[in-house]
Length: 478
RNA sequence: GGCGGCAUAGCCAAGCGGUAAGGCAGAGCUCUGCAAAAGCUCCAUUCCCCAGUUCGAAUCUGGGUGCCGCCUCCA
Image 1: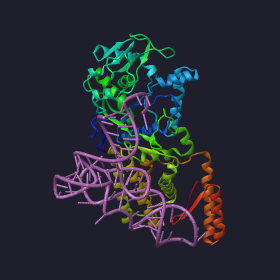
Image 2 (image 1 turned 180 degrees about the vertical axis):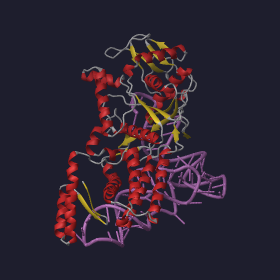
Image 3 (image 1 turned 30 degrees about the horizontal axis):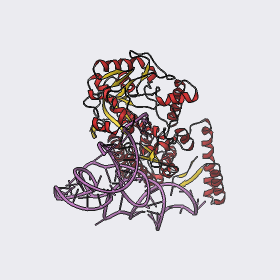
Image 4 (image 1 turned 45 degrees about the horizontal axis):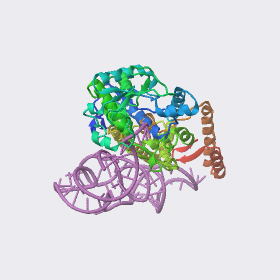
């Protein structure tokens, strides 16, 4: 398959740019992961699902992908929680890292290549902090080390802010150890009851941003393709990361900065710290993962996404139609054997499907526009359903196969929004059994014994098997 | 106060200078023994408001209004 021209909106330039990978066959991605101190919520699911799709799309385009996503397992919130529960900080982070993986698995999100943790990279962090001190970008003060923002003239280029403005806005109390209010901690002096490591500046722990600079460089090299995360990380996290990384290496690290929009609950940002959130754990109990993904992907990744109770029910009908079409196609494929030549109608539909297939890929190539891609999927659904109802028994296998392949590969394989067949042992028996019942029912219908035929349909419906009579014969789904 | 973003039909949502995708809901029709599903047709002369640039603007510029986010931990 030939590669499409991919365009990406870069937060750094605030423009959509042509994507040029550093390596023509490989894409490197660093995504800021979670601070594991409480449950994973829908707001975390959004970037995970988005990057899951981006990765699948790149692979479809023939690239190999390395995806690194960190866990910030040394952090104030974790320590706070640990003290509340009387447990070691690492016990807390371990618990929520496991919970995070469970949530991602439940959403069908493929694992990253690597999940580095701060607690396992202290030596490398100390090295980079030392490099920054040696380079004149950082200074030690009372057991802390701060990055001196004034030493990095480009500071503010990501969030588009001037250093002076940032100082004005500060509402928090400025640490007297800092030279400048905007300076931020690379290394924090140990306090009683906190995890601490030895360093050239005494006992302490890393500041918030340094771990991402260190771990991205370690695993992807100092230059890589994508750096992703939520839009709420632009400042200060990513701004500071850029300052550290570029000061340390003398050149930009990530080429494209990709930030996803926030997820709102009741018109306010979903957030752990305010308790305004819906956990993934709770959500997957109530809805199929494919519906949750469909919901997330129905809106472009940079837009704000609303969630409220009942939202998933509202959108489930369209999603259902998509899935039903696939189920119907599979069943019809099983009993359609076409030995005739393709006629004009078949060719025409095949042509339309070809063109829609391209539309789908181009939608994703245009800044990962999953909303538009889903729109294309619906056009495919309409096209093939129209074909089926128009052609009746004259449907050609080749047309059905084409539509089914696109739907399964793109809707299922790339977006992950199609429910998979329940493949379990029971099905092996259930399937022929239902086919047998329907066969007998067809005979009753031939004999115009409708009351008995209806009874069978109603009874099957009661035990969860929906039967529909179509021009191509009866079809059913569980 | 500074910096971003957004405002498109009843609802959700694409659109990135060439004359409004798609989904849901609604109306009518077709198919059908019935039911269900599906298909077809219709459903924004118009994109928050006001100026301007242009042959041409939902898309660009300026000015309003209203929401949201960041500036403090945050995906």
